[in-house]
Image (cartoon, rainbow, N blue to C red; front, side):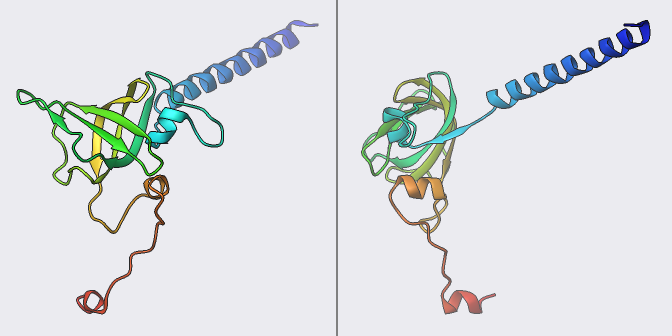
Length: 161
């Protein structure tokens, strides 16, 4: 092999190695920022089709209804703890150390995003409350066993536009 071919081979090898390194770093960055949606039952028992449970330390989102009577507030701080359940009987404890949304209340649908600190317990970094009783994200509606129907407007509402 002559010197020119050796240079080309070294350049091609370096280029392939560089692309592989960039691709692996990109996949690692995307994987660490991935937020998967789980229902309380899926967190406790695993996904229905695969049986996979989220791992402790994994960033996830959980959606369901706030269990009535489960909210515990710390009177000296913003810390609050409550349970979220779904129609299949699964329940997850959510802890949150910030202001809750104005629409948050017991018996209401929410989505909490955070880190799973132990099986069945989520430390939330964000809590979202649904804005009215007519709309529910499809994932939460499926988890709650409800149908996701199109919102229908009455004649009075149509006339106002």
